[in-house]
Length: 276
Image (cartoon, rainbow, N blue to C red):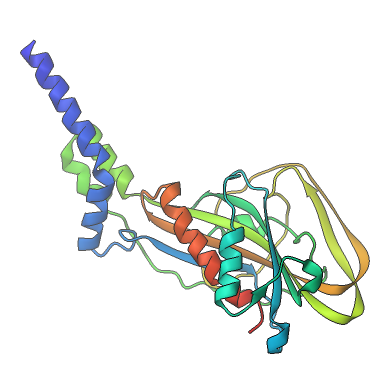
């Protein structure tokens, strides 16, 4: 009976130790200068924003909309995008016909990706941007700056059994990414004729294609049914396509830890899409 009690107590201690492994690993990581000890975030432009002429003060009006076709249906970035534009001196209007610029955002993917990837591989496989003009160059591929990293799974090697496994898992870097397609529509007094890409997908992160990036790094791919076409149209609003991946990583990072950092990053880059 006494032996059984000691076994139960020992198992309880192991479980308690394992539950605190993330905190311990991050603490040890700070001591050993492991870059994954602290939460990090950044952005990858698979298709960068166009370089447009800055508007006159009276033309700094924007209409902003957001839709979510990813598996993470609870994410709504509308307030963050509108507030970011307001903070940057834009007047956000509710009537799209009264805006000089219209920024339409579409969340296509949110999930875990390979560490150091920034979600780039998934973004590059998504093909053309629905609603954007086709046939436009997207810039030159920018080489990524890479650095070597290691995580301290060995820190738990002497803890024994489950605790050691828990420490190793807690020391593993995890990365999350949100991939968003933007269409920035620029008003022209004279109607413009252009070809526009349209698609219909059963999953928002399907397709095939290549793109360009700046500011960070591959991930996994997903599948689904999709069809696409381009149509010729005439409009006073010319649509530029933009694709962004915002990412966050840390030792054993959970989804609810990553999302606030990713949302903050997305809000900050509005200033890089609307012309200044």
